[in-house]
Length: 208
Image 1 (tube, rainbow, N blue to C red):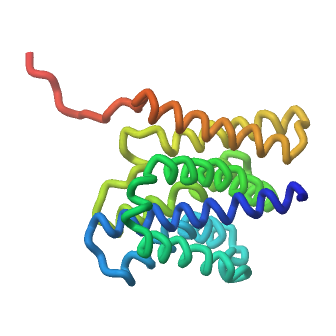
Image 2 (cartoon, one colour; image 1 turned 45 degrees about the horizontal axis):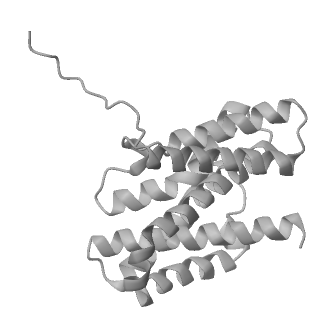
């Protein structure tokens, strides 16, 4: 099996897992089936859609309708097997984290292919991986996970910067993708395992 085939499979697994996580978030808000499928698709495809719009290029799921089918499949699977899936939250977390790592480096590679400034490319990388979740949480009337204490977007940022750093030393793209993606996954897993978090922004003055 070629490297590109493996990466395509992993990308599809990421879409599927993000769709499931989106559907479960909708279920927690007691939305109906249609609402759950919409939230699942938004979670899986929202970040990449926003990236492609800003890059003024063809949107991924328009050029490849299979992305929509995979996203809908994830939502339907979450609905049909919700009692079973609810017991696999930790497993889904791993899939979601793998998707986070992959979508970050894929988004970075795509932005760099348009010869944008590296700083802008890093922004696109974080957007690709996490803004589907931002749209999901906004539609579900929650503060987006990206802006809460959890180390989420920060892991994407670290992976994207690592990719650029290794690229400057001539590391082959596929090896760079693998290493940077694993860094994101490792940071995310360790942050959740040891409850690591960024400081809370607090503008209240302490009473003297």
